[in-house]
Image 1 (spheres, rainbow, N blue to C red):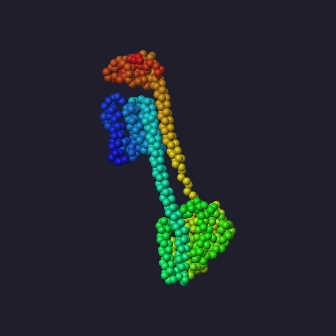
Image 2: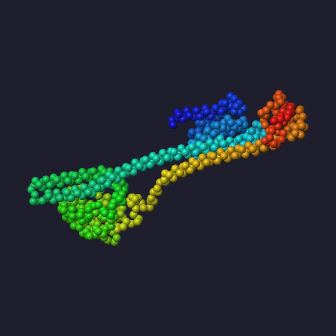
Image 3: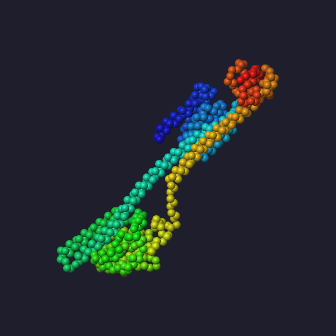
Amino acid sequence: MGRKAAYLKDVLLWAVLGLPALWAGLTNILADRYTWPEVIAGLATIGVAVALARPRPLGAMLVTAALWAGSVAVRGDPTVFFPALAVTSYLAGVRMARARPALLGLSAAAVVAAAVVPFVRWLLAAQWDLGAWFFAVTGIALFGLVPWLAGHARHQSLALTRAGWERAGHLERERRMVAEQARLRERTTIAREMHDLLGHDLSLVALRIGALEVDAGLPESRRRAAGEAREAVTAAAERLRDIVAVLRDGDDPGPELEDTVHEDTAHEDTTHPPEESVGELVRRAAAAGLPVTLHGAQEETRIPAPALATVRRVVREGLTNAAKHAPGAPVTVRLAHAQGETVVTVANAAPHQPGRGVTGGHGLRALAERARLQGGSLESGPADGGFTLTVRLPRSVPPHVHPHVHPHVPSHVPPRTASRPVELDLALARRRVRRTRLAAALVCLAAAAGVAAFVLGFTVYEAVTSVLPPAEFAKLRVGQAESEVAAVLPARTRIDDPSWPEPPIPPGARCRYYSTSPEPFGDLKLYRLCFAGGRLVAKAFLPS
């Protein structure tokens, strides 16, 4: 909401809340007519409350509570300013997130009003007014607490709606992230397959063409053509490396690659691995001209299914690297079992001439991650002038190896707890809203019951304490001193002004009305005593 729109709304709110005060200054329909200084003071106080309603809603509520209590104390009128108290209390409930400050503030306001309002009434009327005390206590509850509870229920409902939209936005962002991660995994999978399959095949093609290039039985033109073809295959291998680097988004495989390796391992058909067997890989490499020897071919049948696919990938990667980096050098592939683990080794001797192949370094990293996920290890490096690749895989994955644990995350870091379900959040929020609404309803019922009980009790109390016995009334004489009459009068008057016709009041006299019996609900019969100049000037019996 713009600042200008908020300002206009506040001005409109001030005008609406100030209408009862303005009406009280023009008529006496709501209460005895207010003086214009009282009206202006009320309008100014309402303006202060409206100005505080947005930045300090609790302060605005307390200001209107003080205004309402002041009108009860000074004027004995609870009708003019209660709309301002009710509206600012509701707005405070809508705009306040915490309930404790509001409840403490209203409780303090009720206590102060219960103490100050009767005292002010006693100073102005020279008698205690329990009705003012009643209005001070119940008014704070009815016009302050109940509207605040209704506003707080609205606040929680709006918060629930906002939380729902935020959750929906969060889920949408998660959906997009999952889609993006799936796209990255697919790119990484494509890159790995291109590296493993096409790289292997291109290496064997280059090896075959290299054999033709050095074949002395071919004419020079054919050997030159073979050399050009080998260079074309090498260039194709370089372009393949560039494509793999783009698909992998850099040389660092990162967590996306690790997730992909784990996902591939988890979904791989370990019962019937789709790759060629170790023997077939060796035979195809030998047919292409690579001097390769396989030891322990019979051990392949004893390798557990979960490790077999990794073993075959290790052999294929080792043969590919040997063909690229050590063309013509003897290669040895060895399968063995030792102490509950499978060991596969691919080693090549020192090359007769430096290799012309290219490498992106991705194959060994992917193999190392695959071996780690299966609880094994990978070792590679120069050995006796050549290069040796050794992978050890357990016959069964140890239970402490968890595929979701990143290798760079310390083992002492606890796993992240799952987020709370959306349904649980919604249920808790709805429960809070229901509790607030139930509390508002219970407060309304309790306030209504309290008002009814207080009115009943106060009616009985007022009837009992305002009785002037007929015998005492008969003894009173016109012209008697007011101090002598006051000695026999009850503590309270029954009413301030009868609603039925009565005899004319003597000029300049003030009259008091006392009941003739303690019956609170029967026909009301009154004794009227009028005083002027400190003496009793008239006495009369007023039938109902």
